Length: 101
Image 1: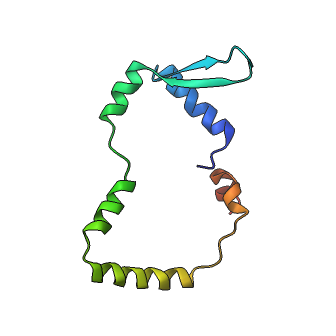
Image 2: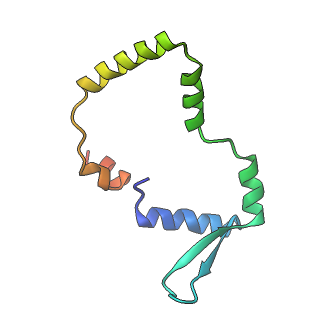
């Protein structure tokens, strides 16, 4: 997700404070910490909506074949008009990219 380490730390701290996850320090290497979901976290997760990524797949799967071919052609045209991807930006955290403007 290209999130900065400090952002992840803040999010983890909030989850730990809410008792949704717990930290377990390694006995072998005290620098290493693993996160485990708590029972409260599991109950909350069970109520959470499913990721949207399956919705696109299912929607595309229901389209007739001729519509998929049309969509394929149109998306090909869109991609052909897009600027080349800056692969260096892909390695930078999103907040750093957005703050460059």
